[in-house]
Length: 306
Image (tube, rainbow, N blue to C red; front, side, top):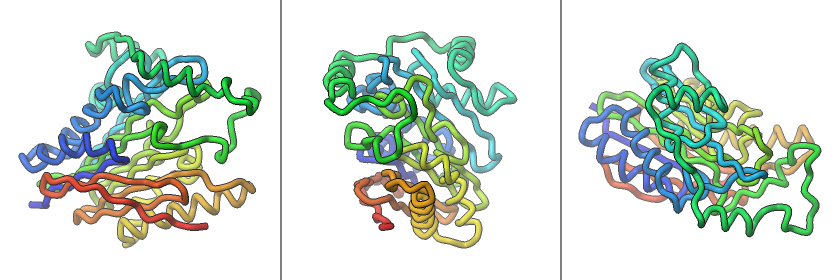
């Protein structure tokens, strides 16, 4: 039997690993454990970038994105632009289990969730709305660009706007499972979807090679198919750490080709042996939680220079 391991993005990822880690030790399947951990983060209204209580988009709408993937079967499901439903990760799992599809969006995703028994709820909190009003870009002296999506260097990722929790686990049977869930970037243009609900960008899981997840500016992660790229590098024999570092270098190369500054992104990975890796671009300050045999510790990822 494998030693159970679970990893999760950012300091609030400890909320997830504190739930998922003991469940894996108790023998739960990887996918069950990581989704339980992710739902704990989604339900924590002090987290401003995942679940209810997050900071809304440019016009005040709070939409959620999520995907899940089972490394044993490659089964996966996702939702994007989901409104008024508390747990996007739970709905993503229903998409995986109950439909022939992988991704449902917007009103279609909400309709499906209601059909599956989820309840409509008000997603905003007083604290979240207050922060949204206080920090809205329209309150800044710098003009807001409405004619085009912002360039990567214009998107600010800080301790209040991490935009994703990715949770990846290895269970006692040697199976991998993963979930990626978010409310997306605060003040995003309405309808914007990042990497989090996209299989191969924000998350990819395959028992035969490993699992990887991402966080940060999703547009840059999508450009390189970040998580899939990392898993394929592990399939070639790279360690999780080596694969994450190569993904960061690929982000640098992508930015250089367009003549823009590298965005703040981070990656983490877990292979079938239980080995862990993580890396980020400069100024990201990426910390992540790791639980081995149910005990969690925080680690800081290596920054990869240009």
